[in-house]
Length: 410
Image (tube, rainbow, N blue to C red; front, side, top):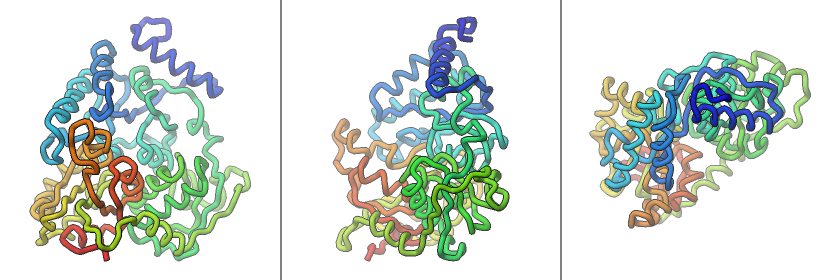
């Protein structure tokens, strides 16, 4: 490949991967089994154009490759209110991905669509919440791939370094929750617990004790929280995740650098810090599904909204992947949700949409496009303040639905 037998594009990709590996002391390249690719977004100048040029000359990908989120729902572009010109530009990526053999998943949770790399397999991935899930819950091996995923996808290679090496997967910090594990009964609390851990450990590898079971959506929110406050890429939960079977084995014989304990007051502090909406302010936007909701979360949301109507002065987005939405349509959940006035949105989410401050200015839209948002996602409430510029309320899923149908925050 490096010698050019498969063309200039592949040779350049291999050269970049080799330089990348040499910079971090990698001894060799390894075969990867899967890629999760950074979908080029029309809200970034030159991003779509770059993909179109690349797709003209590049050979197809060599491994199964999925795509991350874009700036609109490509199947139903008018539903989010995106400017038509921007939606048309974003839609250009579809033919490019088809030529490259990249699967049009457009989601931050590809694991919900059946992309489950085997335990111990090497992969290359973008999207912090997907990366931490692949590493921690599935036991696959990936670093934060960034733009190098493009090179890995067309070569099937990645340098053997970072979290691909077993020795770098050892735990560094021991984490306890002072409350009984039953305290973590909600998606919101798992989000906050992850955020608290990320604040403390930064980019290292926490090991959590005292948790006996966890639902899939809770672990997705948990990892997203850690990757939001820190840059955690791998965690272990003793007796739950596959590299932490029992005792202290996830530390691989090393002593923890620190033992960290959290209690109820830590959770209350986070809720207060992420709830910037004053009592007299009226919330005009409610969003659920960051990371994208799974089928069970759509079922539960449908049960909360059944027979109810969204307030006329509020918009409600429930974000998921197009594959999960299709399953929810078959099960009748989408019909129930949308009968209330809420929208089930695929392919995107508010912080990746046209509602970003910079995009609103480019297209002559109101800034901020949202006045005040309520969400059950700590990742969403963290980023919308900077990217959209609105006030936020971090609330439970149930409380978000109550607000959506007309309750004030107070």
